[in-house]
Image (cartoon, rainbow, N blue to C red):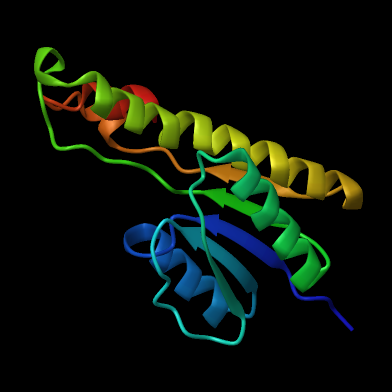
Length: 149
């Protein structure tokens, strides 16, 4: 019997994250998703957790929940991101900068670190970090977001 693969995806309440979760569930994967809000995907193969990826304790608890529910973690997709309104650098507040960096950089790091620990137990796993086309477009007002991705 082939064991089902287990994916963890951050930022699954909407957009690309929700699309990925829906796709992988439809293709037979068990998916554990998270976001700061409620999840909208209703499927027996989907487990949603409401967490803030910038909170180390919540991230640890989420990865532990995945391992407890499924016994393993095969793939992590770091997708969660804060995308601020476009603003020139001199008009971007420190508060906006902090929110973007905390989620897009620190949050991704924390999730990768905890997932890697779980994957080491199996001596196998994959981590995928979602970037953004904004990094290469050099669009006006996207300096903070582009730098974080």
